[in-house]
Image (tube, rainbow, N blue to C red; front, side, top):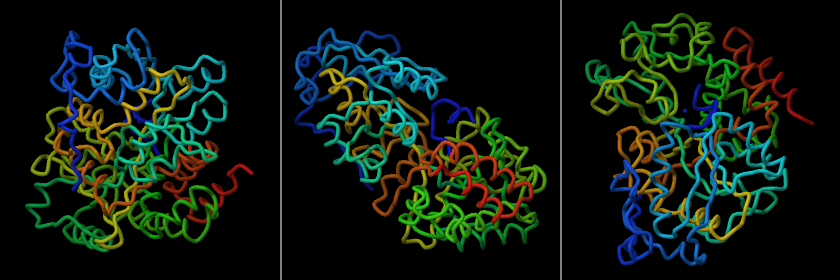
Length: 456
């Protein structure tokens, strides 16, 4: 559970595409002139090809509103990344960030007062917004960009009743294990490339007198969500992506043999007192340790491994070097074998509530490789699955790792399952029963209780 950046989800937050050099125009030639905004960077003032946006007509003096849960300071790179579009077209983008976005966007849509565009962090919420009757289909130009630059799975998440509503934007990789590079070097440990290797590494650490894994699932009203990520990752590995899809869509029972195998695989690690909870306590201490604090014992040398998403980098103290030769880094949570690469992740989608030409033009810009590369240069802690992204434009090592994983031709991406499930399951019973499971409840009872909660 929990996508990056927005609302409560963040509070608990070798393909190299290039811009077509022959088509790049100067901003002056596009009619926009130079940006005079304070704090503008080379990336935000860079020349881009304006033709894809000017084809929507004369947009000078037009305004597009965009509403999101991405607030200060993460909002600054977004605003900066819009300037090339504004300079090209003469349109103005009015940005509104709101920590209550996930609640308020539904209220506003139902009341008939939606923004022109919204950055939506879950496919389930997209479906709710479409159900209000106020969301608009994405324009053909945006759909063409998505077909060109994203794995087809991304388009499926916001295709509802055969109509496509929202282009993907940012992404996070959840299939990561955090570790100490210096500990690995000193102890002679190697990064595992299969699940069997991960098990062998864990046992080797135990033999060396360590409790290798640390974990925490406390997150206020959302306590339990990290277990959902663990289970989804294992579902992709003990079964396969197609079975995962059936489970997420409830085409197979939540408590079937596939799900049972996945949760038991999680229990191999999280419910084993020999494996957890390094530096924090016993198995039950996982339920009372906040997810923000759970990986910090790696820095103290009291645990060695922590499964958490790419956005976890922000939780390490200021001054921590997050790099392959740093204080802490991460490796891909391996698949069953080295030739399979399931990737669990999350992301955001841009949904429109207006179909004016300037709105369509801005949607097209945000779905382009042009915008992805500009945004990458401006942001630390941000990545996208847009295949037109040049990974060299990513600004820090963990972003580059996440980008490399997402853009690997072998990777099979799947969106966070609980974010796609009905709220009664994905953000209620799944969290609560997962917490009960950590504190002693057996797998069968846990999964049976979640299955019972699925809306009829």
